[in-house]
Amino acid sequence: MADTPERAPSNNEVEVKPSDAAAEQLEKLTKSPESRVELSPRDAEQTAERARVEALENAISVEAGSKESQKQKHAAPTRKRNTISKADKKASFKRHMKDVQKELPVPSRVFSKVIHNKFVEKTSDVVGGTIARPNAVLAGAISAFILTLAVYIIAKTIGYELSGFESIAAFVIGWILGILYDYFRVLITGKK
Image 1: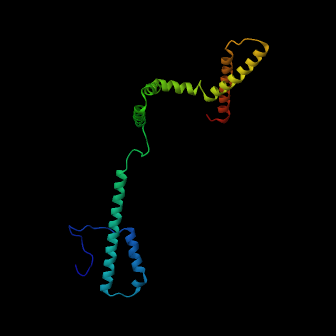
Image 2 (image 1 turned 180 degrees about the horizontal axis):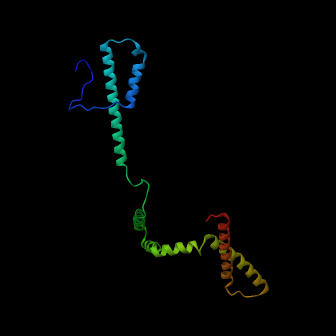
Image 3 (image 1 turned 180 degrees about the vertical axis):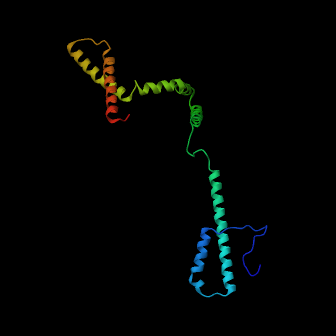
C-alpha cells in the first residue's frame, strides 16, 4: 500500500458508492478551467479528496431523504381524511338531536321526539317525494281558491246552495295538474 489515497474500508467505515450527482460533480471539477492548470501531486490529491468528501456527503443526504420519504409513505393513514361513514353521521345526528331537545320546552320536546322517530321520518320522506310534492300542493291550493271562488260567485248569482265538496274537488283538480306539471317538467328537462 504505497501512496494511494484510496484504502479499503475498515470495520467501522461504510463504503458508499458515488451516486450520479456525485459523478457529475466530479466530472465538473475535472473539466473546470481550474483543473486545466497543472497541479502539484499534493494539490491534485487534495482536490480529489475534497471531491470524494462532497460526493460522500451528497450520497448520505440523498439516502437520508429517501428514508424520510419512505417513513412518510408508511405513516400515511389508510382512511381518507374527509370520508365520513354512515355510523359517524348517525352518531353525530343523535348527539345533535339530544343537545337541541334538551333546550326545548317539554311539549316541543315530546313533539320533536315523535316527528323525528325513524318510522315517521321515512314515511314523511316517501309521502313528500310522491304524493305531497310541493308543486302539486301549491297548484291544488291555488286552484281550490280560484275554482271555489268562481263556483261560489256563480252559485250565489243563480241561487244554488253549495254542499262543501266544491273546494275539495277543486283542490284535487289542481293537485292533479301540479303532478302532471312536475312529471312533464322532469321528462323534458331531466332535472328533479
